[in-house]
Length: 471
Image (cartoon, rainbow, N blue to C red):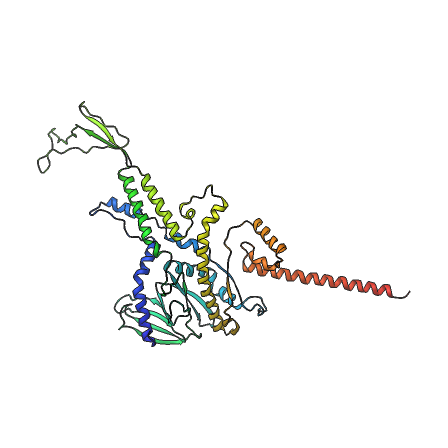
């Protein structure tokens, strides 16, 4: 691994150059720009139109289904005794000021689609600490041990790609102490790379954090789209074959034998001849609203049966089921068939998805916790910067009725003696702001109750004093 800033910049640009084609292919499939299905050579424009219409893009659903179940709802410190006076943790204040309630969605979707995404935590000119997402198609990072290290040795993100020979590309690069400005001719041209120091970024390690959907022991990341591309192509091919059969062979074909077509004649009634001296037949207008008839009784009419479409539909259905099994997406999410399913059947169908989501949460949760530590370090909050036992709290996205939740929470309170306030976060759809508001209301009620009891005690003492006064 290179250690000089120029060497690191060249290495990071080379990584981005090597991965860009694979990432671009994933991005194309995510946006619906799929490979064309197989078609015969010299096919007609109608075939090409059917090829464009056959694309059934399932890729956004594979990304969106787990992403819509992963929302960071709060953060809990490892040391619960260190609570700020206003009740708002500095980590959560950084989250809100960085608008990560909404921006976390792009980070999660990017990591799920491409296999990895990045964030950078930095100090702005107004000394505010902010975290923002970085695209996998513009960002690369190097690790001393890519399979196990959570902290990059260095990272680079392209802010502007080259537009021509004179208009060079620009990038930002971070190592363990400083930020650099990088200028380059192209991603694959190491000779045209220049690096300039900008400033110290304020952290003790690289401020870029990687969010990986899955990392193997070789350090390779994998998202949910790449392994499904070939299966997506199979679905598109089946849909294309269906559209071709539906367009050309789905209706009965009427035939006539023993009948000569009418010939085109000129103003004098003479038969027109073509360039080869052959008679020119008149076009026959045949459609579903017209009848065929002939004056010659030797003419025979018949029909050819249409091509059954059921086999094509079953093939598409089978491929979608394969997509469901391999991507761990419940079949009813893809097929829309949810009628007559019991609660137990729905729970069984959602089990594989829930396990996959939990795997993603473990990985992304570690990354968000590092973001909180970086922000605390830049703000000078030592306790939070060294808090490795803090944890991200994810919103419970399981759909339960309020009555079911209340019954379950009541049993936990009565049978297991769990404190009532400890069960508040398990109330369906309760946000952190609502929990803070409940805490404030309880404190106000406690103060009011204590004040009322003090008044009663004071009134009782004065009554007792009056009774003890001698007559």
